[in-house]
Length: 178
Image 1: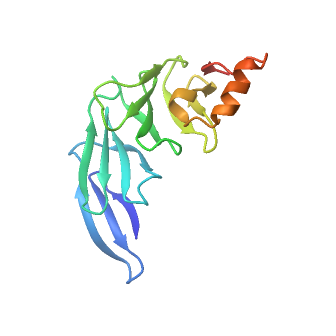
Image 2 (image 1 turned 45 degrees about the vertical axis):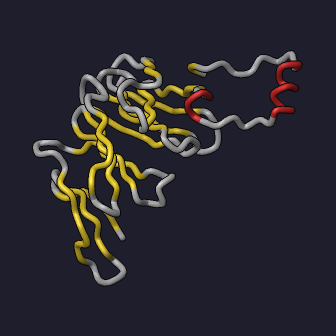
C-alpha cells in the first residue's frame, strides 16, 4: 500500500500491488493544511501522525479513523512532529511558538517537557535512532542538539553498569543542550 495526502483535506491509502487504485481514505479537518506527516515506527505502518494548524491527529490506517487528537499542541502553527523510535508512545512536536514539546500519546493533556531553545520558528525535530539525542532546527539559523535521556530512550544500562557509573568519577551527560 502507498499512502499520501490528497489535496489538503484527505488521507488516502492506495493499493499498488493490484493496480494503482484508491483503497480507502479519511477526511482531515476542513480548512486545515497538513504541515507534517510522520509514520509511527511502532505500529507496523498502521498509524500516521498528521500536523494541521495547531493540532496533531493520529490516524489508524487499517480503519482510516482518527484515534487521537492533540488539541492546541502549540499556540501557533505546528511545523513538524516525530515519533520516538525507542519509546512506543512518545512524540515530539515543534512550531511557530519557538518551542519543542514532548508528549505521551496515552495522556495528551499536558506535554511531558517544553524546551525553548530557539528565538524564532522551530522547523524540524528529529529523534536519533540509537540514543537519547534529539535534534531541532529553526528559522533563527540554529541547529540544537539536545540530550533528553528521560524522554528519548529506555535505560541502556544494566544494573551492574549503573552501579559502576555511580562509582566512576566521570560525570554523565546532563539533560539539556549539548
